[in-house]
Amino acid sequence: MTLAPEKPADEPTLARRRGRWIDNWEPEDPSFWNAVGRKVAWRNLGFSVLAEHLGFNVWILMSIVVVNLGDAGVHFGVGQTFWLIIVPNLVGALLRVPYTFAIPQFGGRVWTTISASLLLIPCAMLAVAVTTQAPFWFFLLTAAAMGFGGGNFSSSMSNISFFFPEGKKGLALGLNAAGGNLGVAVTQLLVPLVISIGTGVNLAYAALMWMPLIVVASVCSWTLMDSLTSAKPDGSSYRTALRNKHTWVMSLLYIGTFGSFIGFSFAFPSLIDLTFTGYGEFVGLAFLGALIGSITRPFGGWLADRLGGARITQWNFAGLAVGTVGVMISVAQESFALFFGSFILLFVLTGIGNGSTYRMIPMIFAEEVRKNAGAGADPDTVAKAAKRQAGAVVGVAGALGAFGGVLVNLVFKFSLEGGGTLTPALIAILACYGGCMATTWWFYLRTSFAVDRAPSLAYARV
Image 1 (cartoon, rainbow, N blue to C red):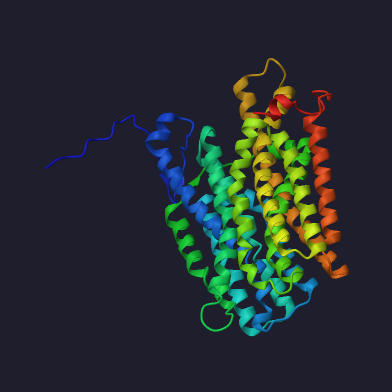
Image 2 (cartoon, rainbow, N blue to C red):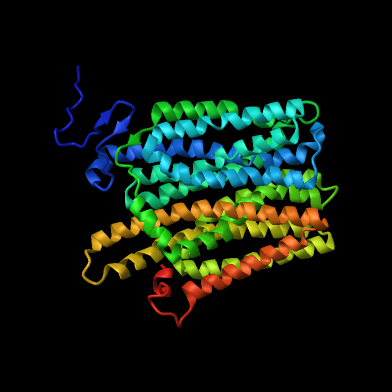
């Protein structure tokens, strides 16, 4: 009989305790990472992506449900329809802040299980609402419960950031974010197909189709994920970030990019249905916008690496302004082809902008920390402080960026409710992009600024 070779006494091992907690997580140690860390980190990433993806599936679900309510015998006005779109976006944005701090409190394994399981609530409520033709207030409460899915992004990103070494966090967090964002496209692609199975429109299927997957994700999270005792909250970095003007500048720019992405994603199916009578069959193509916006996000980071994050962000907002003008012209000329094409351009650019703005954050705060630390500071200490600062800013910007989607849909609501046209809303969005262009130029692209006022183009480019 052949015996397996004994493990060397000095080979790294995991110090586990009850509840799948790991006490000795050292991803920056190459021997630890190669021996045990890498496998554990990637396993946790995989199940994190699954749970986060389902979160986005449920978060965006009402965007498809509302355009099919009439076929199910439920009729709401334009204003009520947009409240059903706005509320899950609002609740999801609000939950991103407490969800970020839930990981240190409960552990990644437990909180991922809880946050995934919570998705069963809005699905069950939706099934009841559409089968009983519930009153508007119950639909509104259901929409609010769908906001649980929006908070998952922050807790998932926070959890995974602790598992990977600094040199590999970019890829891991990029995959995690993309896996979540793609949930929008998957819902908008699959739900119209599933609810059409059989005779008529079966809206209950829009809820029931996710419930087995949510159970699977919850069980997998509980049995196969881990929690790290080293995942501690960094309150000082958040406090410092909140006092820094660049936190709010970058949050504004992220409202313009991610806020546009999630806001357009929620609204696009309804805008097709409400703006172009007779084109209802094209609602099923709305998923293309979210899909393309998700795919182009890594491309925005890649462009920022080569041409400069501030420069790409500046030109991106200019492109978003052009796309918005295209939508305005399409509405005036009643051209569905131009309308759809202009929105696809907007989705492409929101994805690129998401990538470029996120790429700017570590560069900006690396310079900020270096400048404040002084010439004699230890480089390693400065680098670690800069990473903590950037991580805190990413959390703040991610939460505020989601509020941008609320603002987008509010202007759509008031525009359509007040005048029956999208033009006033589009003018407001165009003004927002103009403001973001000016902000990017003022803080990050001027050639005549002082170093103590804004970081230089040398580090806005990478």
